[in-house]
Structure formats: structure tokens, C-alpha cells
Length: 288
Image (cartoon, rainbow, N blue to C red; front, top):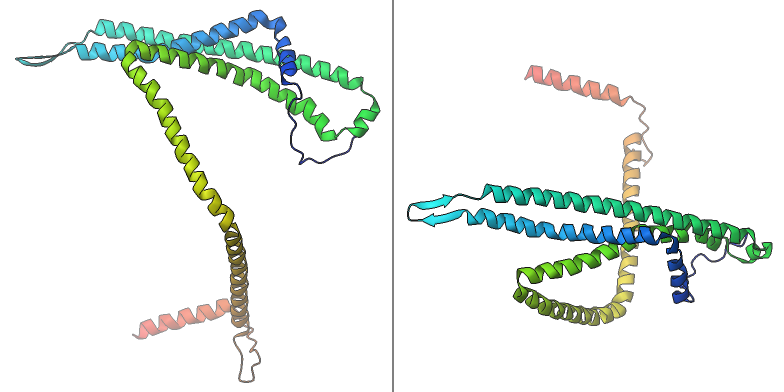
């Protein structure tokens, strides 16, 4: 086994990120069709999920269109056929979205597991060909982390994070299209207000850090002294409480001291004393 090494060492980044990324993408080559199916199902699932709120809005519009105010009063005659049609379409869209999400999750998990298996197989072959000198010089923790943690991280990112990125990208584009379809004026206002709001928030956070960081730098010795003082105070308080409890216990067991300061040892059964006191109280109540 190799040396343990310093486990507090900071993790190292890839020396050649572009080369590593191209090598990782090369693992997708045998799964072009499956990967295309993942992209298609992800886009369709996100698209159907985006259409849901639009259909809900159309259903509300169909309900409100049935409300009419006349001279005789308010009449409510909604088009139930239209509402039912939109409801069934909405249910179908959500079921289709759930089905596509399930399919893309299943396909992507299968792809990630196969890629992970291939990586572990190649890594096992590589380790079996390494000389023993490598294991004497390399850190044991790094080898174990490479075999287990690093490949497992790649598998999780392929099966979860990659699909989430695609879904989020499609959702943002779809929501922007729906906003433009509903009201391009409100969409333009939102597009202008959001960057301004982000800039204002970032400026406020920058000012807050500029005020509080110097205060923290100058006041940390005082906070350290205060923490030490509170710790010492609690320790003394605990010691004093323990001493008081010990003295009270010893006084209860010895019955106090006599005139010479020697303890009066009382060897009695407290249960008997309590029973005698109870009987005396009962007799006093009878006499009264």
C-alpha cells in the first residue's frame, strides 16, 4: 500500500480541460441514437410542461366568458364543452410530459451506467499494468478516490445534471416564447427591469461587504476575547454549582455539624422518618 499522504491537500484541477472534455465526449460516440432520443424526450417533456399553464389560462378565460351582466342581473352560463375539452387536453399534456421525462431519465441512466462500466473496465486494465513502484510513491487515498468517487461523480453528472441543464435551457426558451405570445409589452418590461434589479442588488451587496468586512477585521480580537471570557465564566459557574450541590448533599447525609464543627452522623432510614412525619400530620389533623 502506498503512503497515506496529506489528506488536507487541495483538489487539483484538470491540466488540460479541453482534452479531457473531448475524451469524455468520445464515450458518447457509441450512443448517438440513444443520446438523440434523450435530447428529443427532454425537449418534448419540457415543452408539454410549458403548455400546461397556458391551457389553464384558457380554461379560466372560458369560465369568465360565461359570466354576463344584464339588466335582469348576473347570469353564469359557461361553455362546459370547451372547458371539458381543455381539461382533457391538459391532463393528456401532463401525462405526456411525465412519460417523456421518465423515458429520458431511463435512457440517460442506462447510458451513464454503460459509460461508467467502460471507464471502470479501462481503469482496472490500466491499474493492472502499472508497476509496483507507482503504488509505493502514489497516495492511497488518491487511488481509491479515482476508482470510486471520481467515476461515480461523472456517472451522477451524466444521469442528472446534464439532463437538468438541457431541460432548464429549453424551459427558459419556452417560457420566453409564451411570454411574448401573451404580451410582448410585459415581456419587454421584464427584460429591462431584471438586469437593472440584478445590478442594484449586486451594488448593495458590494456596499454591505465593504462596510462589514473592515469591521470584522478590526473587531475579531474583541470577539475572541469575549468568547474566551464567556467560556471561562461558564466553567467557573459550572464548578461553583457542582460545589454547592456537593456541599448540600454532604449536609443532607451528615445532618449538619455540632458545636465543635464535627459532622453529626445520622444513620436513619429516610422512609421511616417520612412515614412518622405523615402519621404526626394525620394525628394533628384529627385533633383539630
